[in-house]
Length: 288
Length: 258
Image (cartoon, rainbow over all chains, first blue to last red):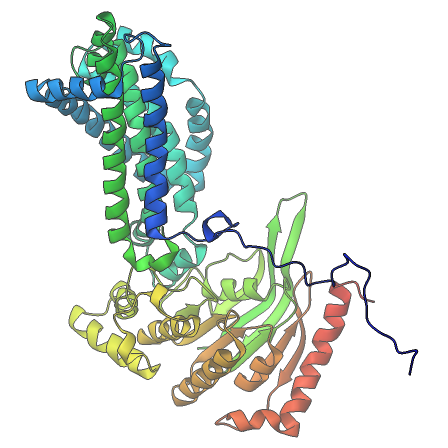
């Protein structure tokens, strides 16, 4: 038959659904894709390397005065001097003590109060609006007041760090505690447990993984408010040293200490994260 | 124990904008009777169970356990929910021991009883697993083992198999019916699965929507012990159709299909 239907296509038209084989994007660029451990490590190091490179180039170019932006090598050298003289250990020690004290003081009050505010309407009505209100007051505005009240004493630092952490922390604890399923509370009540026993044995324990994560965040804020309080009024600590260095235009030390602060924060955060993973292993893969 | 609701009403919402989850509901469950309540979602069947458990206060009417007004939860009434039934930080065995401790069982006895109950639901090898390491069906088996471990006289189950896949659900129904036939208790079983209700129960009660009240009460005269083969019998199918008929009208109304 001469009149056969031949399936020829006009040139340049692809059959539908069979697009030109396209190279797929690597998995680590895809939406919700995956990445290998090695790739992740290389990329995260590259991020640090990039910043270091830009810093080195800018300081080598001479655009900025060495006193404004010292080069990385000198900064490391300056920190080395601080380590050699031992001064840095004293600075870290006192700052660390302040942080731990204020952090514990915030946590010890915020956790029980947050549990009550989350699950007992009386405390919710009494304290949640108040905490929301105080949380929106800029803590920096309390700094002059804190000096009037406490002078440059340790209590002034504790007050500022506590103010900066407590009110936000307590509201986060409230959220964590609310996330404990109502069914678990009701099951406890069917065992004949009293309200306070349910709170202590079920609600608190059930909220602990969430509270742990909130504490990690709060620890980060503590560093911020520690530095604020030490820069403003202190005669010791990392913030004090930074403030002192400003007077001598010792930018090497300022930048060095800022990096040390970052490292300390990172170390503490990772310690909390790893211990959390260990403590809450029972939650399985759902927890990161 | 017998469980009795008469003219029961539970109101949610505000005074101005009230919402009656249950109103004018009458239901009596005799001692050692297995009664299922079916109905469209939001018909107040879970609210009914909560009142029975003493977890929800009634607004009006009467709720009695063995003729005594229900005033809060008690160890005589065990509850199983659809989900979040186990404490995630405790292993299967510890979950049972936790309950036993709270209801006042002596320390020495707790371990033995937990092991015994886990064996009864076929989970001996899983005593040291955390809930996250168990399948949905296993979790519900632990929850059932836990509630049975302290020997309540009434069992209140709120869609306990609702989150399970079809096959697991069927196996769980067989497990439950076997346990109940060996050691009868008063059971109030909430479900929206008609097949499940007919298979398990002595009576199936259909609830209407908004406000929830009892619309039909269908005795299930199938012989016991119930077996999986029964579900193909004409009797079973007819009963299922009968229940479905009542629910169908209700669903059409709720979904605005008529």
